[in-house]
Length: 405
Image (cartoon, rainbow, N blue to C red; front, side, top):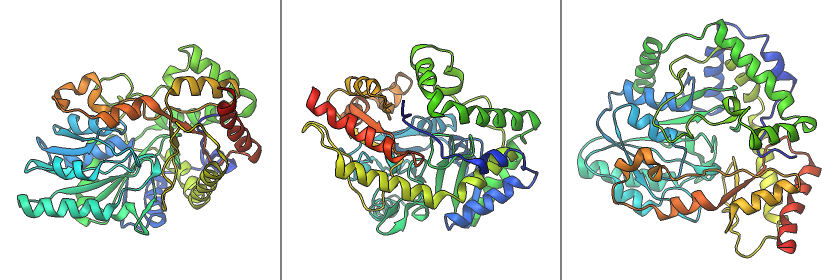
């Protein structure tokens, strides 16, 4: 079974588990800032913790936060749990990012922050986003922060420039499903000295330092990842995950229970073990980005799919955290591929304003594209550890669907 995702791990990350020290987190922050060409990088236990800390440090409360309807629900969770109001924007079907016209309509006098998510690694036109925001600032007479959600995209490029630097700050998630991982963890980057200073001070006063138990927990988790994604064992792991609840604690995303809450450890700072693994991953980022783009190019060139299937946009600057295809019946396609030994992903499988916990924020507005995408997307494996034979197997399996159905 070819897994839908797989962290790009080798001996370096394994060795990092045994070479972490008290300065590892600071070294990781410095190296992260250098790799992505920003002045400041601040680590957090999760990306959602970073966004929550931004709201708290900047004293943003009771305000409207404009964000996509079709994105990970943790963005909305951080918004609500910081005392703010999510204002959702439906997505375009062309690239699955926020619709620009609807974004402009969503910004009002109550808006304090806009969060563009570069979904699946497809960059939004950040120049256009910033133009919309600047016009709103002139109209309403106050600053509107732009925080880039780069959890999927990392260093995607828009107008030949990294999306990371196209706002007041950027968010990253570093779980094992992300382009690079620190086991768990998140990062907030900014070139704004005031934002960085206030967030660092607020974090250091309000987040607990990771203890040895935390380090051990993270190390054991990573050690379990190595055999779990091994070709020999993954078929069993897949069966256990799909057919039993035994792995739920380790594999089920914490935010998929339709409740507005955070993990209990969301205020514990990144551990030295996580930072050391992150340092090993940073050295591979260029290789990872290049590999994902190369695999995507093969899919574009070699897939021969039913006419009713919609390939993802072929966008200059995309980093392809996911190769997302829109299909009439994603459950059927996922089951078919699994029988061929290929696990497909289903991300994102919900529309945030349609979750029961967010009904009060949805009101009587409709988000038809977000709802449709949540029911019709599949994601192909595109992780850089794929062998050529595995890529060929994925392509053959999906091309066979057209013939056999």
